[in-house]
Image 1: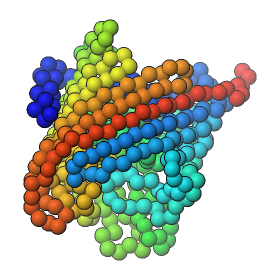
Image 2: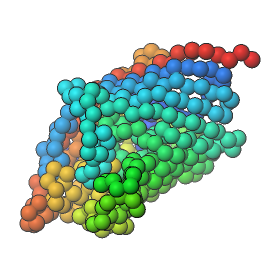
Image 3: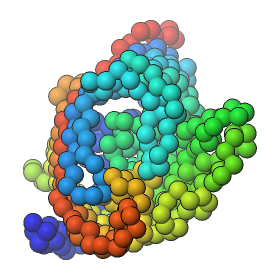
Image 4: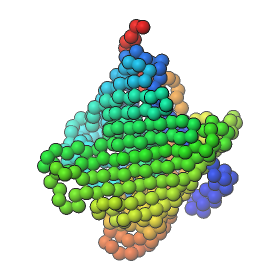
Length: 411
């Protein structure tokens, strides 16, 4: 099976000769939120009901991570109002429910480090939603409150696992969005933990930058671009009670080159590929096993009207990701302390997404990971040969996002 993966990846990469993985129907219909302000809604008070039902199963056959199942739904009813074409306000609730449980941590698990808010709530996991968005005349938008997070940042898979769209809390803070012919940019601060005097946990926030430099018009038949991405998570604070290892600053970054070829054929709409150099750095603290590391991630895709076929290859050297899939990294989340020497992972995926009616979409995805054997150190500090294995994840999703007009201001 590994020989098949290697041959298929090599063939497609050679065939496409450097063509980028743009977001297909699955992402647009299931995960992404529209960031643009539509002047047609000016003066309208609307009720927008955002819902996502999901059933996803992860089965892993390696020592890197344990398998699990995610059955449940997210619901986000929001009332929105646009007083002018350049300003939009939204207020509502963001609810997470997993089938089979009535107890939820106050703070959802988001990264590789073990840290929770301590207390638990019953019934559902519920957080307020409040967003104010302002657009300028020169392409810059500012967002305060509940920012456009998750897959809207368009981060690479080794830096951000899309499954977090199902489990992580709504990102909150401040965000700047900019788009013109030559540049797409998203810069944000996500404030994850606030502290009071004497708290026993740390202040925590993430700074992120996700940008794309465009060498020609993105609507061209053959489009070239360079992604530049950066994440930094800081944990600290001057008014908590932590005195040992009280400051941690963790960083991930990526830069690459890609291209997409639009075919506009009956069956195949686009082929794309991209190669990226990844890095990580532990600027302060001792949360991670390594001080710094790097990786290479090559991936390509073939896109039809409603589906996408994906292939990828990851090679890491002491690389660890804050929010990425552990299979794209050099440490184990299943056995703390276990590390891997220069691991490789082959990846193949398929996703399908279609809007069947206005505001109602169905999505399906299947991902296969072939982790190759490599040397490493087990949780007891003993050097040994780490066995590889094939793992998979599959899910089915139904998204609803109808919008209802409540009141329209008379002109």
